[in-house]
Every structure is written in C-alpha cells, then in structure tokens.
Image 1 (cartoon, one colour):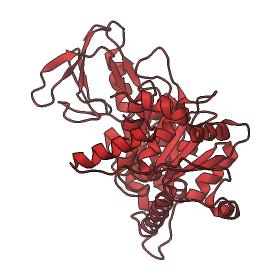
Image 2 (spheres, one colour):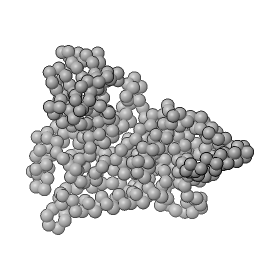
Image 3 (tube, one colour):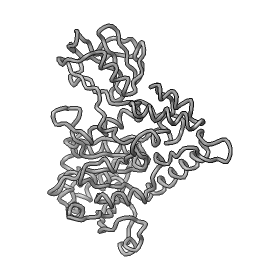
Image 4 (tube, helix red, strand yellow):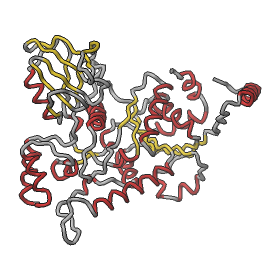
Length: 421
C-alpha cells in the first residue's frame, strides 16, 4: 500500500517544517517531538524525505516487533525509501548460545549495505533508514563485518565451484548432505545447494564446468526445483565470528592460557565452529563497533518513545551484567572472570547519547508525553538539548465496528476544514 499522499501533505504542515529545519541546520543537536504513537512512523518518514537534505536515519524502538511495524509503515508512506530492520540477537552477549543463522544473516547483510552499497546491484542499494530495537543498538558488533564480501553469483557468470564452497564454509555455512535450514550448503556433482539466511527458499546453482547455467529456488520438503531466481545468489555470513587465520591463532593462545575456555579455544583454533563461540568475540577480534559507528556520515538518531526505551535499556544492562557475573566462563572460586569480555557488554543509553554527540549525530526524541522546555534544559540526563516541537496530534478512536461514530467524526473533521483519507 502506498500512502505517499499523506506524507506529502503532512510535510507541508508548519510543525513538520520546523522540525526538519531545526534538525538539518548546521550544528543541530536534535529536538524533542511531542506526538502520539500513531504519528511516529510519519515523523521518521518526513525526516528521511523532506527538507533540502535527505537524512539517513537510525530509528530506535523499544522492541523488535515495534521495529518491524515502523519499518513496514515507513515503506508504505514512501515506497521509494530503502528501509531495513536490524534485528538483535536472541541471546545475551556472554551466553553460551549462538544467535540463529537467519538473524546473523539479516544483520550482516545490513552491515554490508551500510559499508559497501552498490547502485548497480538490486540486492545492495544504499540504506536510507535503519530501524532497530534498543537491544540491537546497545550491543557492540565485531569490527569489520560490513567489509566481509558475501558470496554473490548470477546466471551467466563464471566461478569455481570448489572455491565457492570453501568461501561459504569460511562464512559459517554448514556443509550437509541435504540442505534443510538456513545456513546449510550441499554439493552434488556440479550442483550447489545453498540456503541463504535472508531468503524464503534455498537456491540451487547449476554449474557447467566453471559456467553458472541457472539459479533456481527449491523446496526443502521434497528437494524439487521451483522457479528461476532472477537476482541470483546473495549469501552473507551466518556467523559474526569468522574463523580467519588471525582469529584461529588468538583462539589457540587463549586455549593454552585460560583453562576455562581450553576446549572451545582448541576447536576454534582448528577452524571448527562451536556453539556459543560468539561470547569470545571481544578477545578474538581487533575491535568492537556499534551500530551508531557504522551509520553513514550525516545520519540522525530518532528515538521512539524514549521513556520506554530508557527503562528497557536499564533492564537489559542489568540482566546482562548479572548473567556475566554468574556465567559459564567464571572461575570456580571467587567468581573472578579469567578473561575480560566486557567489550561485548551492552552499552548504557547515556553512553550511546554521548557517542551520538561526539559523532555529530542529531538526536530526536519522539514522545507521546508533554515536555516542559525549561525542565528539559535543566535535566542533563535527558540528553542533547534542542527545541520542543508539539505536533498537536491526538490518537483516533479505535471505533471497534462502531460505523456510526466513525462517520460522525469524519463529518466533524470535514466541517472544520480537515482532510480525511
């Protein structure tokens, strides 16, 4: 559904014009917008499309479900926008459980589009808006993931089947006899089956020597080929810790130095993926990044319902800290951590705000609650200062099947000079 007419109309309203001007002026630190929840996607869409400069946005929500909803709404308001969601792990950073392959694949594909967009590849356009839950924003990410080249194949191109298979294994894909779930890869003769983490169906790549004859999707249940895949194969990493030569060397050193992780370290040193190995990311990679670091220059941060987000962030940090204090890698006596894994711990919301300020990212809070400008200026913990802009919006009734009441309200809006869609 395209609702671009609503977006164009709203963007002409004085409050929205003031918001765009205040955020896009040089040296802007952001603003506070008072708007009901139903207007949140509209605020973000106006910021992303209106004004002399189109701002890349990082939209932050309290939950992953809200992130999906806002991304869908923004795409309806402006279908030309490239809106993506950046999911969070289903696990805690220090938990001895690995995130699922489809979650990691969605994350790494977004990171690659942020780092290396391509206007010539329909699967890799530049990103206009990243929508993420506060959990995904607070968690540090292994540095350099966006620069890892995915496996990209199209019909008519040439590639060495064995090199492609080796590359997929390096990206964390598990070689199987039959592909049954995301992250699996299988080879039979000159046929390569891959289940990319971002696809609905696995893909079958048919080789004739080094030439790629065709690429089709196929059904997992009976392994029968389906329709041609015109855009080809795009297979991003399905692990956020890739076992490069450097990582394997560090794992070997860690295994000999820290008995608590010796078994895991030895397997990683041999190039074997291990469940829960992502917990060791901060001691096996050169640096940790945040999603805010990886956003394009000139980006702005839009925080939906900051009161709920602050509460959610506090709970996440507390839970993760409690888990780390009693986690599997603690020493048996004294509850002392033998290795420092704090690099992957959730940041606090204050640290993220400070980072946005250092990077020059305007910070826009969109809240349904009334805000006092004087109190906001005095409250340093509220974050960056900026104007308070009240959109003067109200939530519409749900009506719940009361057609008469809905028609009465519509007549009232029309009589008062309003526009009704």
